Length: 240
Image (cartoon, rainbow, N blue to C red; front, side, top):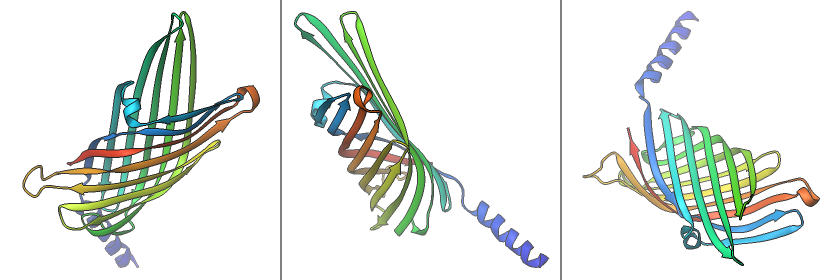
């Protein structure tokens, strides 16, 4: 029995050192459009803004994907932040609006089938997705602010297929549930890695669709956010 345990320990020890840690850093751009409803008290506000509509008010936007994996196990972080502002003169009164949105996800995954660099691979993951919205309205000397945030526990899977060492398709789908919120997320990316230049960099282009449903309270204290956030994705991944 001791011999078997010793052999098993040697195998596990060897496998743990056989594969080094691999780190991916991927800055990207998600050209988001918004479509849905925001309810405040008894008033429902219909939102329908294209990427080009939002671009006119964009002050800052930052998106970053971080990944660390060793053999089949890995961890990831996906950060998204935008800041929008506008100012208008309404009946000789200046009305200013400042709005920020944060969508951060972090989780762990395990490659169940295949090899992510050769052919087909299937990788389930567990994560948490945090969303925060903040809107400040300034009218003359009066300021009104609205802050909301929520977190969903997320379960999903990632499917990757490499046609060859240079071209691949990467699809992800997940569902999230929280105390007062739910949502689902769909991503499809096509990637290309040059055989001659930037050999540790993969460029990708695709599309992302995120549906969110959050709400609390009733009557005059009612707040509900039911929104589709969607648009093209473009970026590059550097591997270390």
